[in-house]
Each structure stands twice: as C-alpha cells, then as structure tokens.
Length: 234
Ligand SMILES: [Zn+2]
Image 1 (tube, rainbow, N blue to C red):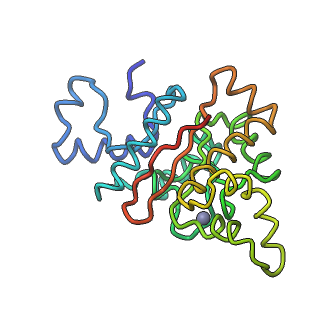
Image 2: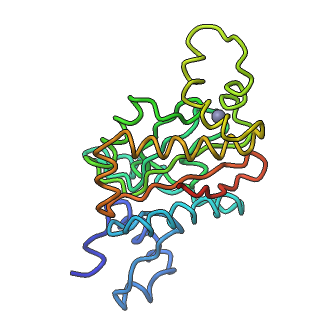
C-alpha cells in the first residue's frame, strides 16, 4: 500500500488542508508522499545512525531560528496517547536553560527524557533509560551536557553544600579530576564518563549497543549559540 495508508490522522488532516488550499494538488494526483513539514514526524524505520542525524537536523533548525516545533499540538498528543515509541532517549541536565525537546526541535512522543543535575548516570536514571531502549525501542541514547553547568562547577569547587546536593558530586568528580582544572574539559569529560557508566553499569544497554540496536552519543549544548557540539564517546 502507498504512503497515504501510513499517514496518521493528524498527517491526513494537514494534507487534506494543504490539498484544499491548492498547495499539494500535484502531489495528491501523482500519489507522491504528502507534504511534510521539516522534522514533522520521525520516520519509523530509521536506523540508529539516521535517528542521530534526525536529532542533529532538529538542532540545526533551532540554531538557525527555523524551528518547526513539530508534534506539539493536541492532535499529536491524541495520536501518541495510547502508545509511545520515542526514537531517542536522553540523559540531560535538569538546568532550566536546556529543555531537550526545544533544543532538538521535537515534540510529544519523540524523545524519552531523563533530566538530573549534572546529567549524572544515577541508578534510577539508568533504569529509566533501560526502559526507554529495551521496552520502548529508542534507537539513540544521548547524554547531553551544557556550558556553564553549575553542577560540574560545584563538584569542582568541593565546598560544603546543604542537604543532599553533594550526592551529585561523587558521580561528577572523576570527570573533574580528569580535566585537571579546566571547566569546559570537565563538562566534556562528564558527558563521556556518564555515557560510559550507562553502558558499563547496564547489561541491558550494553547488549543493545553490541547488537547495533542502540547508538550511544553525547554532546554539549552551548548556552550562547544554542548549538549542540558532539562529544566523542570512548
Ligand atoms: Zn547543568
């Protein structure tokens, strides 16, 4: 069957609206794919590398001021309400300036996001990301740090802090030590360290990676430019 049969209800409505407006008559009569806004719906048959490229394209749109803000309407919510199948899962910092769906120009049902100060791979985050990949089928496991990360700089300062804040520090300090006093390097090392922990501490995730079903990736979100710079995961 053709592409039209795979359209969601939301797709079909938009397509019909476009046809009614005269913008897609040629596509409709030639049975070509319906017009699709940039990044509107992630292809369901993406492999992990294509899924990563799809994310990077979303960040490029955001940086260029051309966000499509896809999948953010009530129709999309209704579409994914019965079942979710996010194509990527995240371990990101809880920082208010790093909202992951906006950074990568995605919407409802696209990303499974865990956020925690310092994007540390704590046990409960690992469990959540095992669920995202093993059960829900996310193809990319992305660790996202960011410039000016308060959790990393606080871990580096090692000053007394109230409550349970210092619980984060022990997970970040190996990265701080490896960076030898350079805060930007510490942020990169922290992304590498947490990504490695995700794989090494989880037999579920390491098996998916070994089978080529999940790609582990990392990046640093620049608060000045909005760009995510990739970090090579060792
Ligand atoms: Zn942070």
